[in-house]
Image: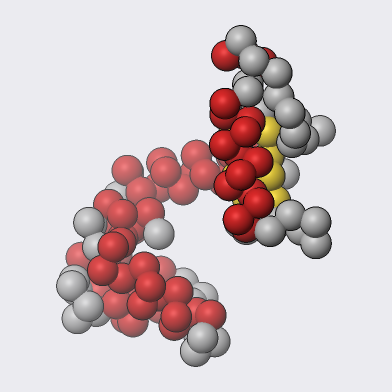
Length: 124
């Protein structure tokens, strides 16, 4: 994800790679696997690996990993609102409801002179 974002190739390849994983059952076990697959789809394997190993991409990956650990996000999709509330899909909460809850939390954040109406404090 971050490599494609860095290369400005996310928009043209996001749906393609999602389908490859979720519809075709492809398992990418390494950056080299992804590089081989994406070769010829707007970039080369070599350029992909160079971007993958870049400081910018590695920093973004480390930051995302730290956030996932901080918020104990074990699955996706998950939304973190204002760095305090984490919303996950569940039997009770659909992806559409996640967005509604997030909008309410944003509009009613106590730190923004309102009162939170729903949601679970992140990490709690």
